[in-house]
View 1 (cartoon, rainbow, N blue to C red):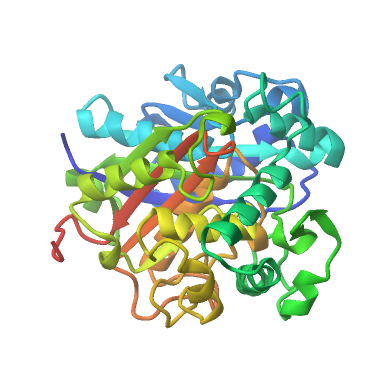
View 2 (spheres, rainbow, N blue to C red):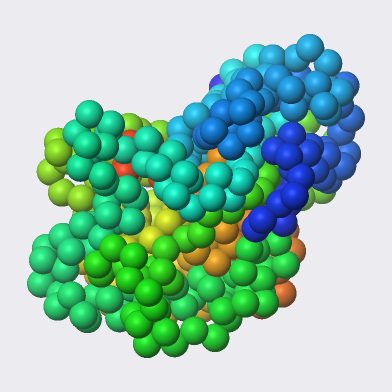
Length: 399
């Protein structure tokens, strides 16, 4: 298997878009191709994440139409659906195709236009990623799932619920602050100075989660160009390499042993670490799936960055800030940057690459420039998990 490099990245503004999904993805894709210095004739395949385009715009088979719109010719173009992990799964498959020698240069990414549906319909369609036979009939939606996870976390680790709510608030404060500094974020220049009481006292969504514990619905797209590593220096002086990937699947909540320790997330992250030949202590920066504040805490523990039950206190103490143990979601994450579900995984990769180039949004850049970064993307209620580990060098020097 060959090593794989990212040589170009592109990203639209997240938020409410007036343009179609086809136009949004084209914008991100053309940015990525221009950044890489490649032409459409050099792209051999397209891998696109898009979770709900049939409900948003009455359009499926979006990857094929994107390939045509971008004038890529009759290349293989495949749409991936893994709920919120759609783009990460698409990128992982793209990397494996290049690693195998099946293609030399490919385009991967994702797009979504969730705000088109409105809150009620979007909530309903998102909830289709829950287990329909057992969770649908009781009206379970994602705020309810993660509200249960928060309550379970409080019981499991003997943390008073009000104390946990205050510690979760630090996730929201941090991610909104970094989103306010990110020109491509949905909440750019907004909510950059939240306080604990602002989060805790916001409108209740699903007890104990308030509105500011939740990520927004969003429109947007992101894309990357991948190629065989031995060819990367032909296109860029600063390629970023995909060192490890992981993917795992979950089950209905009724069959899960513990909401705070989802096996799918543990398994997927371990797979990525094993392939990369790295450990959590080697990672310099994270972009993880903070669909709700409690989700960031659970992810940090499942991936091995903190012990079980330790992430809440560590976050409140600044360990996930710039200068802390593991800077997390410096882009603003889903909470501050926005969450167009089919695009989120590609957006996470985009911001890790920008960090590794020393080119992140002003105020969000980690110093020194990160050597290793990792993304974590969650689809459904732990139904699909995908992890990607990126590095500035093909040599895993810290092993």
